[in-house]
Image (cartoon, rainbow, N blue to C red; front, side, top):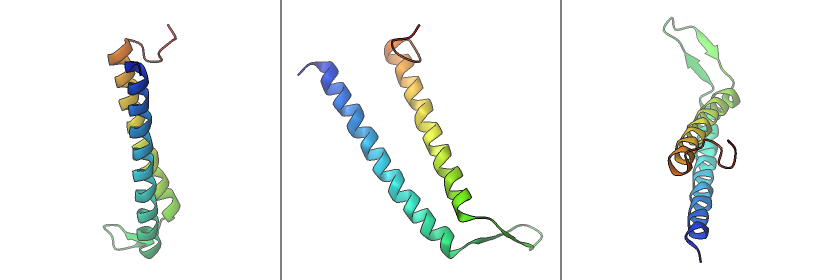
Length: 86
């Protein structure tokens, strides 16, 4: 096997592990927010926030960080942000 093939297999397996981990986190947070669906602010006034919005924003932030790490890794290894394009 060439070193590139080994590298690609490594990257794909790490990505799969991250997706499995984030999926489990998503399920746990969904259960947590379904049980505690009200958040109180400093004035003690109840404010209902939909659990899907909170979980979606958290997940969106995590995937954005993965994208930034991927862009930095591509730039470090190839010198280009999108390998193959100028």
